[in-house]
Amino acid sequence: MARIAYVNGRYGPLSDAAVHVEDRGFQFADGVYEVWAVMDGKLADSDGHFERLFRSLGELRIRAPMSRPALKQVLRETIRRNRLREGLLYLQITRGAARRDHAFPAPEVEPTVVITAKPVDFDRLDRNAKAGVRVITQPDIRWGRCDIKTVGLLPNALAKQAAKEAGAAEAWLVDAEGFVTEGSSTNAWIIDAEGRLRTRDTGANILRGVTRKALMELARECQIEVIEQPFTVAEAKAAKEAFFTAASAFLTPVTAIDGEPIGDGRPGPVTLRLRDLYTQRARAGASS
Ligand code: PLP
Image (cartoon, rainbow, N blue to C red; front, side, top):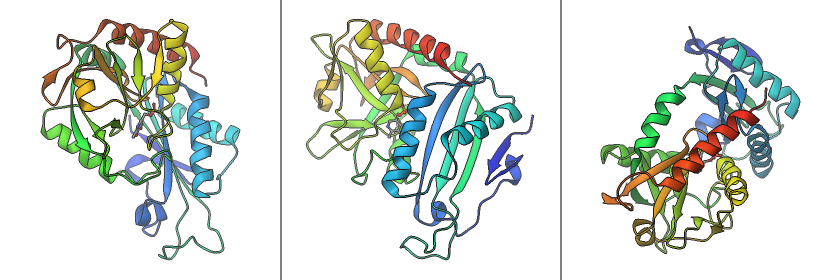
């Protein structure tokens, strides 16, 4: 079935979808995005992604192109037209198209809205994830506002490519002090010697992952202690377990960092249990 994209009020074949060459998303990465997992045709962790989207728009002073209910309706319609049951929904909003000039267009122009959908075989993803994946480390060379989910992802793309070329699934980014910030498109976690879930605090320059937040709540309900505290690469390598989180990856066990095995080199039991619990809960809580 041909994939359908939404662009500025119109639904049409993805192959014909286009935006203006002077769109500020294309010219300056002047835009934000969100990604939802779609489970049984519904949006997982729906509210968390909407909240972050509107926050990102506010931080960049990009006008919201429509209300949250209206946007939700367009997302729903994109899911319906793509007959998407399991997959990912991508939304991008940019400041719009205007004669190229670094400063914001004056008067304001209409924001550009693009939505695409892609099917993903979550069962296959699950089998792969349960085998565990390898990560490498890379210097974090990103800008200072990684809390905003902007489309300016070049350092992330370069880090992911480095991972791919090293036969790894993800790159963990390391700040100037030697602490892991997050992955190129995921949040990074370890289970330390005390059995605590440990991830970087949101005071640091990281994206406040929606999956990260959902997992924190879940872990606390399971009486697992969660601490938001930086860890070094050496601490990660010595951890009992390691994993990463994202809407597109749920919880994915990490079995090696820079070629050094984590624990016994197999996905950890706590990670696997939390992965199952998280995916069950996300599916049950998904909303249309
Ligand atoms: N960190 C970065 C840099 C990301 O790009 C993403 C997802 O795209 C995440 C973390 C995970 O965020 P979420 O759980 O909201 O998908």
